[in-house]
Amino acid sequence: MRIFNDIEKIPHLKNPVVTVGSFDGVHLGHQQILKYLKDAATKYNGESVVVTFNPHPQQVLRPNVDFFLINTPEENSKLIEQQAIDNLVIIKFTPQFSQLSYEQFLNLLIEKIGMRALVMGPHHNFGKHREGNSGTMREFCKKNSIEIIQIPEFILEENKVRSSKIREHLINKEFEQAEQLLGHPLKKK
Image (cartoon, rainbow, N blue to C red):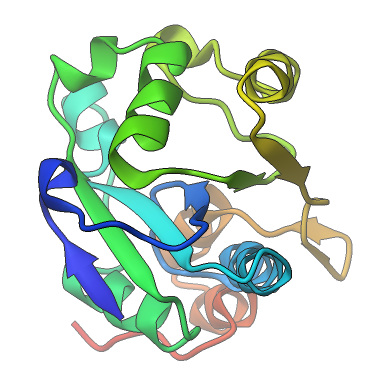
């Protein structure tokens, strides 16, 4: 897996299929997104591209809230690599970057990465004020000849698999439940 820490320095990629998210913990829901991403890249005879952020957006947008990372960015990168992803783009998340509209952000992915298709989960929102949702992004992608691939939410034994739920289990010292949602062992801190 190639890792890019500067979106301005990405070489030409072949038919890039992109997904965007924090991917903290690379839990079972993330793993499902990455599977869809790889399948779509195969369909387009292209490359899979994960776009993520460092620091985590919550650390920038809500610095005074009790928030912690499940894994370090390096641990998340290794877990993403284990899913056989071709490219990882890490964007520095700053207050200035957070002001981009979803259209500006998607245009950045088109201009700098050459995005051919976008894979996203059902509750994924991004852009200033989280205004980029499945409806607005579907419209934008249609206008720009980008296929949008929306996947179902991953549910395990009637539980929605989300990083926030895993953090809740960790706070409550429910490590077995956290590992069940992660789909891999917790890193020893």
